[in-house]
Amino acid sequence: MPNYHEQVAHYLLQLARTRPREVLLVMLGFVTGGAAHSLADWLVTGGKYILRRLGLRVTRDYSGHDQGRRYPRERYSRFR
Image 1 (cartoon, rainbow, N blue to C red):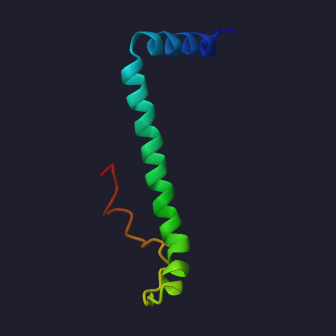
Image 2 (cartoon, rainbow, N blue to C red):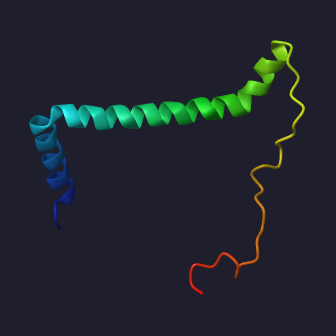
């Protein structure tokens, strides 16, 4: 059985030792991207409540926004 997981772990540790600045920047990018996504999710799901508490009224209804719109299959087919 190949030990790919050990090879990848060894490679990543070696990379972190040789290029710590680049590894730190990549990790910072992942954390920042995740934080931005989490903040956007929080604003969409909990934002209405906070806006109402501040006295602002939200008039749009986004309850069906995840349903998507169905298009004809042949129009957007990758393989024509």
